[in-house]
Image (cartoon, rainbow, N blue to C red; front, side, top):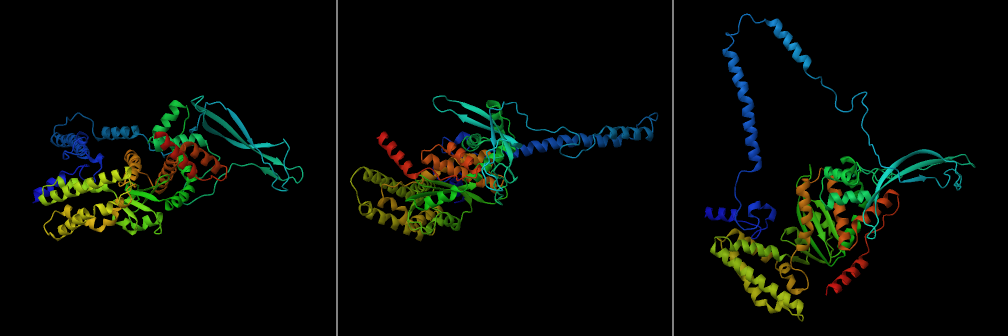
Amino acid sequence: MDIKIYFEMFNTTPENSSRPSSSMPPWGRNCSQPQSHDRSENEEIDDEDASLLEEDLIPEAVDEYTNKEDVDQVPSDLPSNTDSSLNQEETHSDQPTKRKPGRQPGATGYSRSSSLPIHNEIIHLPQVCKGCNEKLDSDDFVKIGGHCTLDIECDGEENPGISVIHTQHIYAEYTCAGCGFVSSSRPNITVEDENWNVRISQYHLVGPSLASLIVYLAMEMRLSRQKIKKMLQTWLHITLSTSVINQTIHETARACEPLEQQIIDELNQADLNNVDETPWWERGGGSLYLWVFVSSFTILFTTGRRTKEFVASILLKTYAGILMTDGYCVYREYTRRMRCWAHLLRKAKGLIDSLDPKAQAFGKKTKNLLNCLIQAIYEARDGPPVDLMGKYKSELSDFMLECENILRDEIIHPKCRELAVEFLNDSYAIWMPLKYPFLCFTNNLAERALRHWVIYRKLSLGTQGKQGSRAVCILASVIGTCNLRSCCPWKFLAGVLKNSRANQSIGKLPSLESSKEKFQEARRSAA
């Protein structure tokens, strides 16, 4: 019996279980063979380290024993302890002296050396006297400071390409002729926030469009901060540090933070929401999960615990729409719910591949029933309305009776018992597609939305803290929502950051009604 259990455990593949495709070795991803149990890379590294340590220790041991044996064989004409003390002083004098970390006293230091010419000069002048509220029209201003901004311009389809614009911003002050009050212009800087260590400021080297490009390279192309720095320096001759690049990404995320509540409100008004989760790596964050809530034109990414309280904080318990989920028990708080049939088919395939005869029979019966119902749903979509629940009432009753008989069997296969329990507990959610054949009976929409960020997690090894996770989730939500609404997310992000830096309203997400019209036009053109 133990051999059967271990065989089935090692025989699990993405085709017959919920294991992801990336868990298979490279030589077995195109087949359903069990994984090999070769030595891992960490073990090889440990062996190499151990061998290196042995090679380092052996010569020391040999020298030690050699010195002990040759003490009496030292020639008497060699110098005495005086020479040895001199040699020790010479060796100590040759060793470099320790210095404090950081910039040394008298060093020239390092700063940004830009050879780009100044293309534009913008003088920011105060328009009204802050003392008497009179309009200032005099040209007698005094320059009090300024900064430079690097940005990019895309001319569009007629003249494709990217142009780097180097703008110098100058701030000035006026002395009012009427009251003598000195009014000055300053760059806008937002107040500090305990949840963010970056501030939205006009006093920034990176312009809005360049910031949008950096977000595109980091989030969409999944490039590291070092690769973004190298790409900008190689192709655009823009030299930025990795700290400035990371600060730009977080500043853009903070500018988009007010849009998150609008996304949550629209999800609670949607007719259908697909929900899924995947583990997320955050330094010091514990066991977190990346959640996705996606409807037809809105998507939300967020990190949190795998609890029903967290789901209720996003989708209220008064949510009246339909929820498409997997078999996780926290979703049972919502009455109008659908189960993903792809998960059930994979579990049935796992029972068919087992060595237990009863489990194989139940797996085949489950697979045949689901395939028959899927074919009936496709026919109902193309033809006239059909009452599928009434048509397959006897087949469903026999199958549910089979599930009850499995629970009475004490020596049944454990995976077979678990699948039967799922059908009995979630029978209403599982057979929901028979009542609404026009709805999708899989959770592929949420799983496809997570796939990109699963690859991002593996390449970046997660995030370094809570602020990094917030930045990824906010930007992913805004980018995904813009894509679903047929709006360019990069122009939208540049506009949001520009307005936020100017202390203006960032507006709302792209219009939902216009997105629906574009979707209908695309469907008509495809037909």
